[in-house]
Image 1 (cartoon, rainbow, N blue to C red):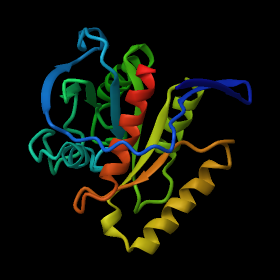
Image 2 (image 1 turned 180 degrees about the vertical axis):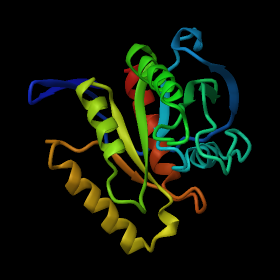
Image 3 (image 1 turned 90 degrees about the horizontal axis):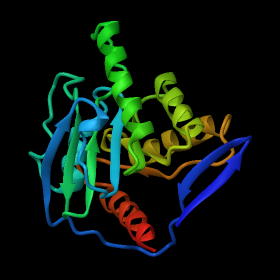
Length: 223
């Protein structure tokens, strides 16, 4: 169910999901197309879930883990390789969208501005977009660039959730502490926290939680 709430004068759109658990089975995951601008994205009306984060946050590995396909999204040791809006069709029902990472320091200002314009254009203009997953490296303290992007999503009334990556690099206790610290930081400016998921692409931790969340939204869109 899509709901609209107002916090501090800012209207926030979110999707209200029940506590029902939907086990999503990924039967098919295929590359669809890459687009340099939002107008060249797929023309159909299937719901889209975008994944974005700082360069080297582990986005490609997470996408491959979620789809159970190690070769779906290309992984690279060089941060910032994704330069286009990449669409992958999942189960012929919804699109997983791989957006370029932000915060890659080795790009020129012109390149950074062009990527920023493409990312924001897609997020603001794409009617099929139902949720943005912001990926955050759990090992790092809250980064200003992530917090600013999250704030922009909220002000722009874009539904989003946070996925903490690389949880296997910390002990379970340290990972939970880091997640709680992030929540505390967000509560300094937010009245309500977005959904959050703790994941490890290496161990496939959090996979079912993220896919269940997507499935709940998909079902709510059909109601």
